[in-house]
Image (cartoon, rainbow, N blue to C red; front, side, top):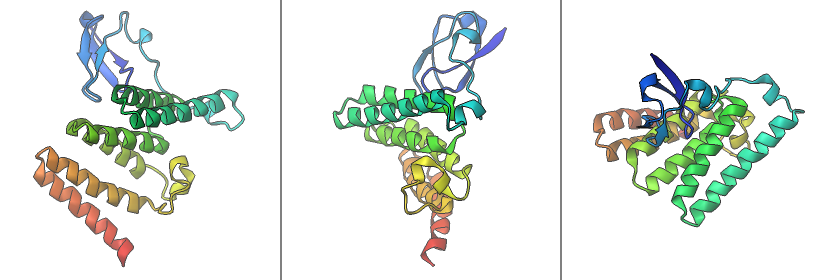
Length: 203
């Protein structure tokens, strides 16, 4: 029989036969080693609700504590980067992403900033495939965001709050990563999309 559990690092669902319980696998999403939990999904990271209304309530003490913890983890990860403590930075960013996902849902546009930080980390490490995956997640979250990005916390202080501008700019970044991976045809298509999108803002 096959069940599924969530990766403790990136919170993605992973299918696994019960016969593999207790053994180590590599998560196909974040490429980190995970142990298949014993006894099915109940022992793994709990399901993350997509839009938990209680957690979103501004007067919820639990939500306020969780938000502060995400901010603390994010700052901790950035501090680890400045100290060149790469394992600590990577682990902490994954924890911040997982906690933010529990609080707001894994499709919350506010996660785009954390995924972009993870992309940046992987680029410095020249781990191109992981960088590309993190960047694509960041782009997809922005694409799914409201047109007015001022409602998304990580864009509030950004002067260029237009969603199209952000997506088009990130398409150019994505094209560069795809070239490093030797995916030149795909890189050309993505770059064209970015350039065409940015033309609207230069006219």
